Amino acid sequence: MGESKKKIVIVGGGIAGLSAGIYGKLAGYDVDIYEKNPIAGGQCMGWNRKDCHIDNCIHWLTGTKKGTDLYKVWETVGALDKNTEFADCDSFYTSVKGDSQVTLWKDLERTRAELLELSPEDEKEIEKFVKHVKYAAECEIPAEKPMDAMGIADYIHMGALMADMPKVMKEYGSIDLNEMSGRFKHPVLKALFTDYLPKEYVASSFLVSYASITSGNGEIPKGGSLAMANRMVKRFQQLGGNLYCNAPVLRILIKNRKAIGIEKSDKKTVLADYVISSVDTMEMFGNLIGKKYMDAKWRSCYEDKEKYPLFSAVQAAFAVDQEAYEGKGTIFFDCPPFEIGGKKVERISVKSYEYELGFAPAGKMVLQVNVPQFDKEYIYWKGLKKEEYENRKKEVVNAIEERLLMQFPRLQGCLEFLDCWTPITYERYCNAYHGAYMGFITRKGVKSFRVKGIIKGVKNLYIASQWIMAPGGLPVAVTSGKFAVWRIVRKDKRSRYSGYRGLFRH
Image 1 (cartoon, rainbow, N blue to C red):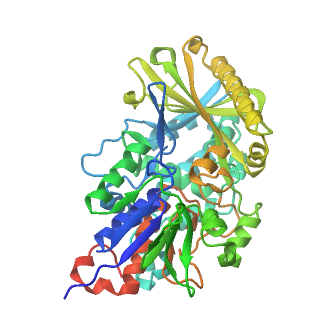
Image 2 (cartoon, rainbow, N blue to C red):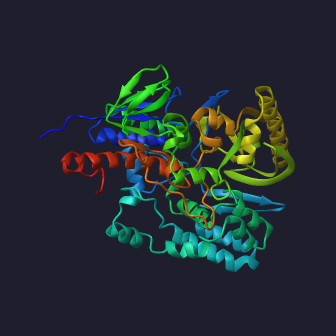
Image 3 (cartoon, rainbow, N blue to C red):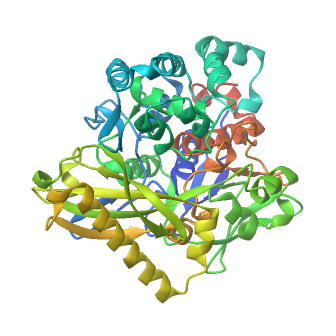
């Protein structure tokens, strides 16, 4: 016996929204996605300047290892398939300090040998680090069903798969990266462990990130962020989903404590059986539904910036002559002090896209510089008037150019500015709270943020967003889309029909 089709309306066409749309179509629903920007993808985005392509998002993609649950999700949504090519990158990043440099290689044994050769006096901590990276390779984000829906059997299964992760948490789960850095004696090793992620991050998070690289579960899909988002758009539309771009949503309609649809910016309404909010959650609470629906947990995390800090960045992109650039991959280095967003900066990073030759004309490649910014810096940028903002960006670009040329003198005359963007850019384009492009930082001694993805007191409204679980990012976004539909399917009791078997575990 067939079922009448119900309708899901999704607000926001980022990775979470596209994932929810695809799983919604696969589960037999009519699905509309409304995206405020001209194209879908959200923060998984890239754009063109001066015949070059700038990639905003993917530094590595967790879940690229075939056979893992997360890979199956990426495969289902069309982001990855058997024909997907990955960049030929052999390292995570390189840290330079004075006359010394060290690289975290994809080959963990190569890393071990290089670190030991550089600093024999740090042998004990180096061996400990390498051993625990091997343990951390077992860590997988739950991708079959939400953690709050897991039973004893699920936890036993997950525990068996990640039997060594408790060792990682015991050694590195109660210290932050600043403390981990302090365990080492060599200056470049001290820098190495506070370069890539904010030093406030709990150290275990860093080991899991690096383990993704060494285990082959953190590759970079060729073509970049926009290409991956476009593959998901294609998958959604091939399934019959409706994507409406340039279609901002004013509010989610709630009647008798039940979501019944949306009101668009043109004041027209769209009714639905279910609504999924896949925008920034502060945008959802602040504008789409109102802060009266924000419970104490959400409120306390947003208000306590010491326990739950956020970070963004000022970034600048350049085109360079390939032959003139001596670096490779991502490199961190010291530089003469300068100010960005009211913050003194003495160390920056540059990432080269030599593996994406299509991002620049023949003989050229793209370089991108990233300088982390936090709440205080966001407030600085937000307080500038338009002319001041543009002038300050120009000053920052000039300062960055000078420091790139100091570090890489052969770039003189071969460096062409492409674009600069700040936390305000993320806020304007993605409604990102304080310009943050990931969720709350997980600090030592603070419970990692996680919520169910529902709004208490409002029926038929679900959240698909990187914000529902720290630290956010693409894996959380794509699984949150799946889990939002999982909850809808369970509510409708559709899992008893054969057409939905294999999509979800119940």
